[in-house]
Length: 171
Image (cartoon, rainbow, N blue to C red; front, side):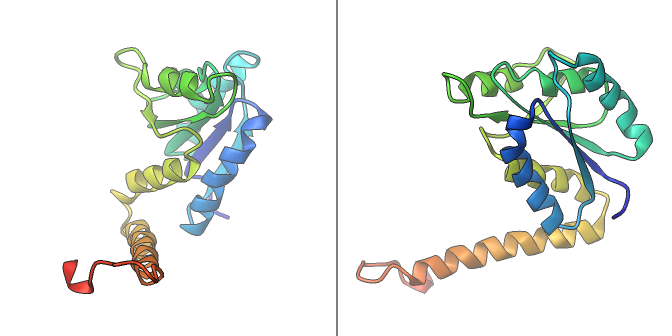
């Protein structure tokens, strides 16, 4: 595999179920990535060092995945100029709503792009959209993914037997 373009950082190993969604989508689109664990609270020096060194290692985008206070994406963003995407994880008594707010409420000058709770696939697709701005081949792969999603929805229309469905000419 080529040098990773995307660095996926989990706040803890329990966030791996979301990280796998990111990884599956990046693999599907042929985007090289790496994945690691670095906690914003338990190993903050590791999280900061990873973010600081990412660009010099060829990484173009970081995806921070964390639950509860979800400080990790912000810590990564504080230590790099690379785009950082935050994925809040559904954990704790608030089911990820606390993490969602933490990821979206960053102070001025330390932006983190946010996707929905457990939305690893969306984080991967957003990362690929950013990369595709300067990569025609990747833009074509992304377009194919979008076209496949459209085809699935159109096929779903045909499977609504027994209901008064909209005719094809409605679209």
